[in-house]
Image (tube, rainbow, N blue to C red; front, side, top):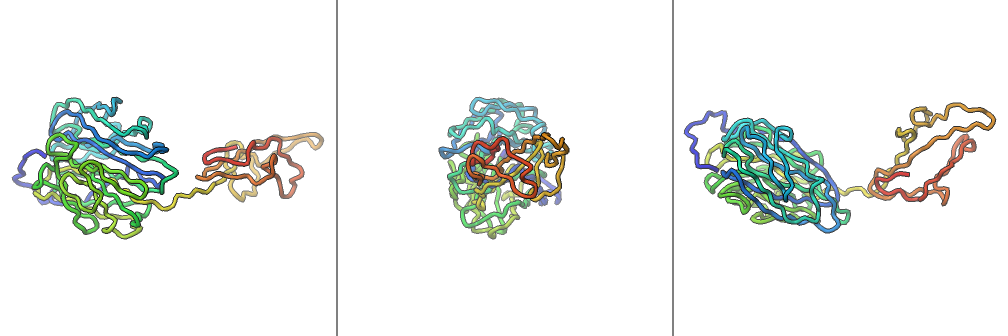
Length: 387
């Protein structure tokens, strides 16, 4: 952070209950990786970082995040040569106050379509901005990937949505999915400034002091921008660069395994960030919470529709809307044709039990009045498929 001294503050700045917005939460077979770059007090710069995604993976979700202080003009940077523009349309939270300007925000751009699982090295190039205060300061790439060969993982992304110009910042990380502690639980901070051991940010999770983070980060301009680079898959948390996968947060290591400090299956984690110098100048933009997930079902799930309308299981009321009502036809030689679609919304293959080639058979009262004129070509309906 810049060497400013706060001569006087009101008691209203000492502590504030904070709100966070959940950008993303999901449980899936695969993993997550993340890394970033800080400009610190520089107005432009280039940052490089690496990630590791296992072979056979596909990209599930990816976000390029930025922390903005003050009413900065639009910024177009490049990620591996591809331009992305941060502007008011992708401000996920805010406006909130910082020591370096009001109208601050956390921005998020969905870059899923631009990310390849084969890419391991990333370069962020941020062009010159006119001010060290009203600018986009820190940047972070978060990637969630699918891989059926890996155990399930639960990942949540929490973005700040309250004033940062306070000494103590109290968060509560609320999840919809219980956080399991049988394996490591990754707590990764995307922060900014905190430029020295004196002007550092102490982190307390569920009443346990994890330590304090401060720069210089290995991937920051000057002594600024402590943020956690990490990966989580195969029930293993790994830190990148100067980040370690133990419980301790110290210096540029802004990653912690909080497995031992939270109760199993909790859905609410209290977190406190406090400036050790009683100043109001550091930033906490985002926290990434990652753990082993509950088992993801690999069972099939059948759905049947007629006329593009779902037919509810056990529905005994014929309807023209879903074509289960065949309406009327001539008694002699008349016929009414209807088409029904079988889909599989589960994660495992669906097997039709009829004997080939009659995979679909009819039964029940009046079954003899109906016939199947076009059978599915296979007994197997793959996950996400239909016939």
